[in-house]
Image (tube, rainbow, N blue to C red; front, top):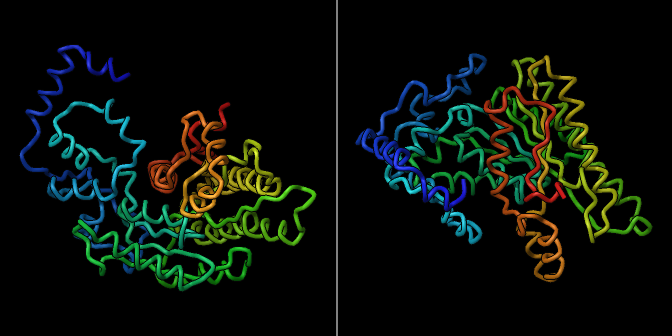
Length: 369
């Protein structure tokens, strides 16, 4: 429905909205359906207390003012300003309460142990923030340098306690050094995760690199390094995840590919990268079939051009390249890292429990033209 159509909604619709507002309770009450049932396979060491789940899960009862503060934690982005013209005219107080009460419990990451590779910065770090905002309190942040991974973990805990009922002691978030191109390093990282939490529910293989060389000029050692990280690293991460998930009854694995798995980027040359991401996409589909009946789901998340801190630095010296990328994107802009938050939580949570072998592209429409 367009903005004008919404503004001209028939009186019956308006009366229904007013009736709903009139029936809204003065105080938000939690219902039995607002919290997901704890998994019977959780060990006592990893099962959170009821009070902790209530504080971690956005969908449980809390004051409307606290909820509004959580929703407003990040400043709005400029490109969101236009969207306000098309938002509903429901009274803000009612909308605030609805956001709390009507959150789908299946999207909660509370009581789940999560792990993200390449997560000290960039998109991987954004995925960790999305998990924490969705109720996750048990999370392993993996990156090449352990001190950077631990620093990211400490910052996430601190950030998650702002305008929240949560305390730092409520979080069990750690940083682990891991070279995903080494199978042994990946295995050691999983061993530490299992020793710490006793199980693993959701894994995101986000570690990756990109370089731009023409095919004739691309040094072989750099091609091999790219494949070792982007392809072999994704495989090692997924395989070790499944080894631990299958005995516990299942889990979710998300392999981060790229829209480059589906198209050829221009004007920059990056043939090995494009081929590597195509391999990751098909790897997700292949593993999904192999492990489907064992309870392990494998899906693929393919971002478009995203304005990470590194990308912003690069484009600051090449404004024409940014204009080119934006002109090739139907939505006319590059994505913000947080544009991926909803997709990664969906794929990692129970909300996608009947979904495996699929790809979600978050690219502003780039691949459809």
